[in-house]
Length: 104
Image (cartoon, rainbow, N blue to C red; front, top):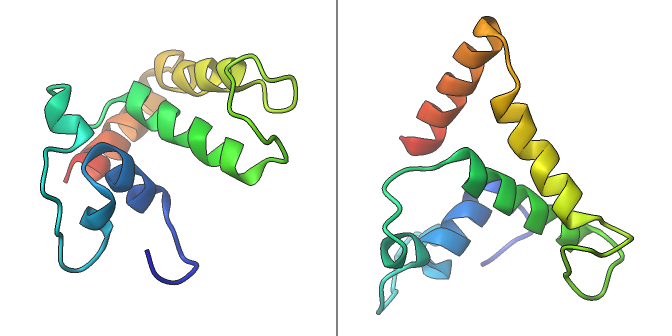
């Protein structure tokens, strides 16, 4: 990846499709993680996973671990999932729109 502007969308594509999918000319020679695992759409769990990875990358922790006391990745992951699950009707519309955006 070139440059320093790496968005959440690019991170998602990098992990679930292929690193080259964020470049202008894809050059992947094998199936991405999404295809390997039968993913057909972006899910709250996959967004939580990418958010957790991004949070770790920005932290001072040197090793990724779900029980790391610095980043507490497991707790963070579950709190992101709760954001998607514990909503009222108005918030649900926003979440639906968010998932539509991610899936376009």
